[in-house]
Amino acid sequence: MRKVYVSGVGMIPFAKPGASRPYHEMGAQAARAALEDAGRDGGPVPYDLVEQAYAGYVYGDSTSGQKALYAVGMTGIPIVNVNNNCSTGSTALFLGRQAIASGAAECVLVLGFEQMSPGALGSVFTDRPTPFDAFDEVTDRLVGKPDIPLALRYFGGAGLAHMNKYGTPLEAFARIRAKASRHAANNPLALFRKEVTAQDVLDAPEIWPGVMTRLMACPPTCGASAALLVSGEFALRHGLRHDVHIAAQAMTTDRPDTFEAGDMMRLVGYDMSRAAAQKVYEQSGLGPEDLDVVELHDCFAHNELITYEALGLCPEGGADRFIREGDNTYGGRVVTNPSGGLLSKGHPLGATGLAQCYELTQQLRGSAEARQVEGARVALQHNLGLGGACVVTMYRNN
Image (tube, rainbow, N blue to C red; front, side, top):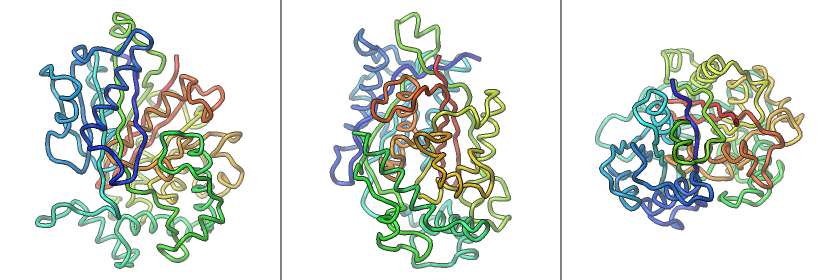
């Protein structure tokens, strides 16, 4: 199979709902930025060299991808619209990588964007069964709390399960959020750049007493990000940059244990994350001990904590110690979410996976400026969507 390179990446500053440009303008801007980035100093890659495009978004009408990309070029290429909840951007990346690795294409543009509304996530279609029926039944049985929005019940319930199983203190989640703010302070594209302390997080308004405060949840966000994927031969032929490649990638979905185990951590994707990571480690011949930098899906501080263990960054039950010893930040064992993550950078659903790709590509190029992880050579991306799907991607520089 062909080696797949991340030739160009583009991202626009994330914004609060109501403060962004329309989705198609954001998407077109990010796509143009990726084409320009891939061309280095030789000018942007002409859109007519792109052979396929994959556009990811969750909240939007069908063919919104065409609406965004037609402003960049109208060359008659296949444009595939992708919706896989919060893992939408990385699912589009997964499809684009497959197209090049299989030989179906040599140059693919992958785009993610989202124009969100304020407030908690909710269903758009209320006249038909929701994909979350089984998730809701398990959550009702294990957690209760019908007055709390569902996403908070899911991930707060998973955090509570970890607390009950391992004695994890609430402060561990607060430390994660404080770390995210310190990292985001150096990211001009992040939504929230104000530093907060762990005590600030604990003192924030409670959403679920003893389990979650408001600052432990990511905000609804608008934004866009994109990546241009190419084969090595294509890059050399057209003089494009090819300094970062995808070393391994895996996508997983739920198994029966998601619902049968009676475990909130499994319900929110712990097993999907662990299985995808194991496949990536096997494909690449590398393990968690080889990672320099990780961008993982911290939609809630609780999910970041359990994902440390799912990805093998620390032993099961060892996340609190991992956090307290600073092994999740600069100077520690592996820097997690140098971008500020979803908690501080923001979480425009369709763009999130490609924003993670943007950050890790910059890290491996050595061009992340104040966020730079010294000597970064191996990076891991984790993007999770309930319903469910998880994509884990390993990147390396050349």
